[in-house]
Image: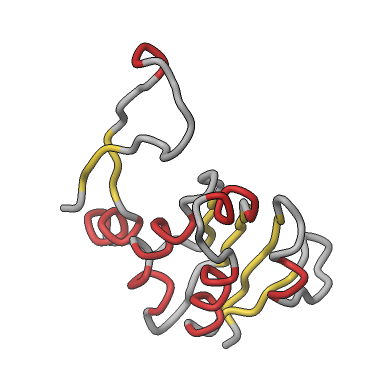
Length: 125
C-alpha cells in the first residue's frame, strides 16, 4: 500500500511547526475498502497533481466515476515553476469537463487565471 509522509514544499518553517502525517492514495483506499467514491474534494495547496496521480485508477475506471471538487492553487503552482493547466489537461484527458461551482461551463484558460480557482470536474459520460 502506498504510504508516506507529507511536508509542504517551499517556505521556511521552524521544525517545531512541521507535523509529519501518514498519507495514502485514493486508489489505495478504494482498493483496500473495495469502494468507488462518488465525490472527491481536493484542496491541497498546490499538490493537486500528486493527488490526481494517486487517484488515476479511480478517476479513469469504467463505470461510475466520481465528481471532483477541486481548489486549484494557481499562485502556488506558478511559484514552484509548475503549470497550473497541467492538472486540468489531465482531467480533460481522463474525460472530465469543468464547471464553476455555479454550474456554468468553465474553460481551462479561465480557471488558471485567478490566484485560486474553485471548480467542479464532472465525468463526461
